Amino acid sequence: MYLLTIRDGLHTRHIGPYASPKQAADDLDRLLAQFGERSRWQIHALESPQMLLAPKAESMERRKLMATAA
Image (cartoon, rainbow, N blue to C red; front, side):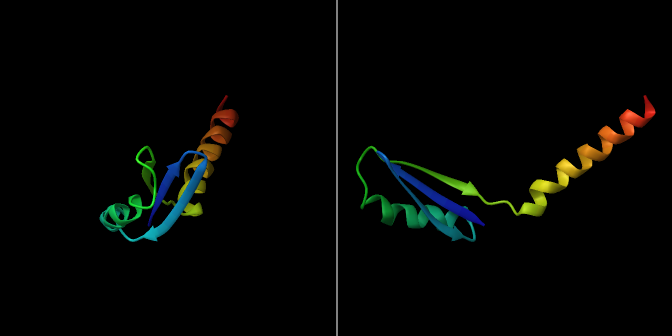
């Protein structure tokens, strides 16, 4: 899933989710007409919490193994 973020001055809008970055880019053309010329945008890939927590759990196990081996 992808999220489109548009920042215009102090205002930030998060739009989505989108199934692909192409869908977000297609919607971006339509949305930019509502914002100023200096607005900035980004397309972010969303990650599930399981994907974020899994590497941390593995690194914790490695640290425990290193501590017991030393």
